[in-house]
Structure formats: structure tokens, C-alpha cells
Length: 394
Image (tube, rainbow, N blue to C red; front, side, top):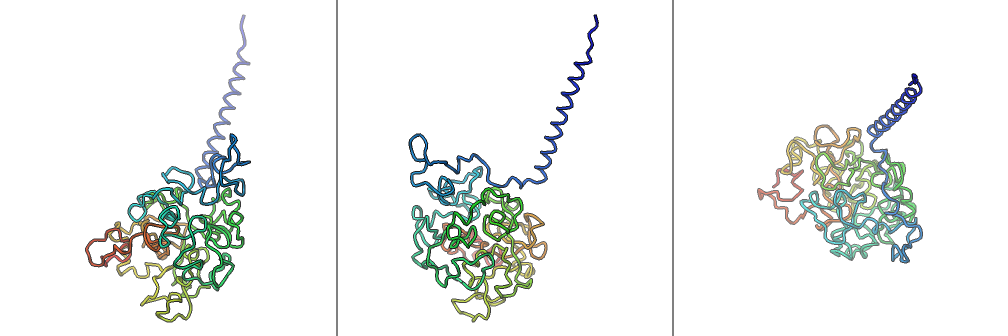
């Protein structure tokens, strides 16, 4: 008796067809991920890492000093306190113990902004070494609430910090009206940054907090995936900036509100630029040109490429390699992260953060390096980052 195999073959054919469809779908999905790798850049991981529904577990409070808004397990400082390892998916900007800073802060376990440890009441407790954010440090005993170089009349395109007060009435916060992150319209820093952590940040255009560089409303740039943990010439933040010579001149109204220097100028405007300044006036801004009365920012070193600046990064690299110890900005982000600079106009622009850390450092004035160790004509650059640009001075 012969048995037909037609039915069996039909089933096998159907299974093969299903497998081909599934494989095709998986391949297509993988290709989409490769084409748009940043589309998954929003916060990832177990919800329980950040949120608690009732602040209660096993008969005890999840957070003893909670609960916190948005059902979170902590405030800004609480969530971002820890030790960076290079594999953590939360950037830690405050450490419980003194961080390893390393050479100019690029070989240890601090991130792009440095670390608040050295200014925090629980750490170094030194007002000169970090921004005195209200949650972690007392009011700065040297300057009070109002930032040095405060200019309440300018740099308000992204919202007026402190509501434009002539003198600040409250202490610096992480975000909000008196902070750097989030919008400046809400005094509540939770509300000013609400939703940003879950926003699609595959496009950083400054249109919302979530679509702004590091949640700095209005600012653009290219974000390093590990927040500059031990950055290199090829793996670092790419900061956006413009050259003063490109129509900006010395008028604050001409400054680009999307640049990283503009973010600093929102609080330190008189250190950035001014109009009709008197040379030597200590409470005014910086005029453009030599002799400088303030160190320039928003200045492209391509303008003086034939001088010592054309040899950046001097003793810290070769062939004009980008050196994250003294970062520079670029006016064109479409070129991606620069591993080499001084190759085209606008790719080597001096930043405020070329010299300073945004959060804090072990050095006075939040500097990236110890300025007191900079010895001119010594023949030894040491860890003095000044010589990355002033390449003939050591």
C-alpha cells in the first residue's frame, strides 16, 4: 500500500515559508537599528531602578527621606550619586568618596562635567571647586547667590535665568528657574525637566528639554554615549559653537543661543561679551581683540592658525588631534565627532569648558587642571592644559 507524502511536504513548505518571513523581518528590524542607532538613546533599564509606586517594600520605606515627586526613588542628586565604571547606565555626578580625577580629568572616573564631590558638604566642602547646588552644598561664602559676571539684561533667548533678577534671591539648583538643566520658566526643577528622561532624543535640535544637549534647554551638540568616561580623540562630546568673527562681533544679541558657550553666558554673561566696555573695568564684559581683557570664548583658532595656536594640542598630542583635556567646539555638527581639528574654518572654537568643568573639579575655579602648576618656559608642560593652545609658552 502506497502512502502519499503530499500532506507532509505541504506542511514542511509552510514551515519553511514562515521561517523565511520571520528571518526577513528580523533582518529588516536589525537594519533599521543599524541605520538609526540613536533612536534608542532614551533612558533604558528596569523601571524599579528609578521609580517606586508606594515607597514601601517588605514593611520598610524604599527611600527613608522620601517620597519624591514623579514616584522617583530620589531627587536629582540622589539618583546621580555613585561611582562611574564606564558600564553604568546612569551618569554619576557626585561620589560618596573622592573620585579618581586622573590627568586633567580624562583618565579617572569622573565625567564631562567633572564631579561635585569637592564642593559638596559631604565631600571636600570647598566653595572654590564647584557650583554650589542647593541640594549638596551651602551658599557660596565668597560670592553669595548671584553668579560672578551676572548679566540680567542679556542671554535670555532660552528663558531668563532667575527671572531676570538684578541679584539672585535663591540658590542655584540643578534645573529650572535657578538652574542649568530644563526650562527656566519653572522654579520647580522636577517640573522643568519633566518627561525629558523618556523623550526620544535621537535628534538633538534644542526644541524641547528632551531634545536638547544633556537636557540643557535650547543647546545642541553630539552626546558621547558614556558621558565622556575616559574620553579619547575619537570618543567624546562634540560641542556646538560659533566664531565671533562670523557676524557675532561683541554684541550679546548676536550670540547663538544653541551654542554651549551661550549656556554658560546665561549666568556669566559679562565674562562672555559686552558692548562699549572700558578697558580694565572689572565688572564689565570682554572686548574682542588684542589686548584681551577677558580670555576669549567663541573664538576660532583657525583665525590665528599661523601662530602657536595652530599647533594644538601641543605637548598633548600630534597632528592637531582633538584632545578632550582641553575640548574645542565646532560650528558644523553634520561632520560628526571631530578626531582632528584645525582642518577647516570653525572646527577649533574656544569654549568656556575648554578650561573649566561645569560641575566641579579638585582645582580652584572648577579648572580642569591646577593653574598654580603652570610654569612658563620651564620646558615641562606637566598637566597644564593651557599649553594645549599656548603651545610655545612652556
